[in-house]
Image 1 (cartoon, rainbow, N blue to C red):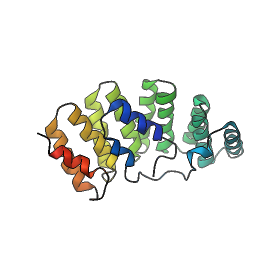
Image 2: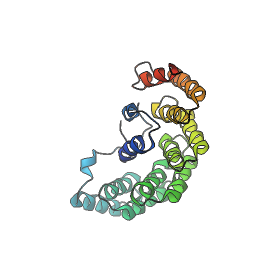
Image 3: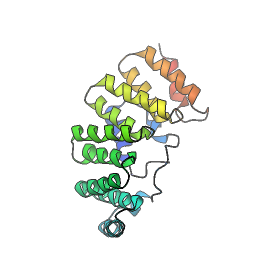
Length: 213
């Protein structure tokens, strides 16, 4: 299932800008669960944003209502409003890793502030290490800043906490291959093939890495 907070934009951006993972990474295996949300179109438009904000204001202690208001604000190009609702989510539940992660997304994608993005992605990894997207996002920021050892460490953490989620493996293998460390790329590709089901869409990519010389 694609990200319902609609981190789909960061997946696309990562594939286009970073180039570490193959396009097939966008057809990833199922990520960890998150609040039940709607299709992206249900959040877009001023009327939808107003509805979600009204619901969130009526239920200030409801995690999903405030999260959905944040999603709608983000989808409607209102980054500061999105951050407000995501912060409210963290007040409700400080261990809600997706809330901190999505604040990082807003700073990274809408406000161009990588330092703040790193701050919140890091907070997400600490509050909920099992929320794999925060590790991947943190790695992508570090990779974009050419801090490859940190990026590799974060992609590795993603595979450790979610070994059956192919996207972490794809970014890790892709970055090592991009850096010319074919030995490491092959090692992680082998581990990925052991961890993933045979019908995973990334299997052909990992097998192709093993054939490289």
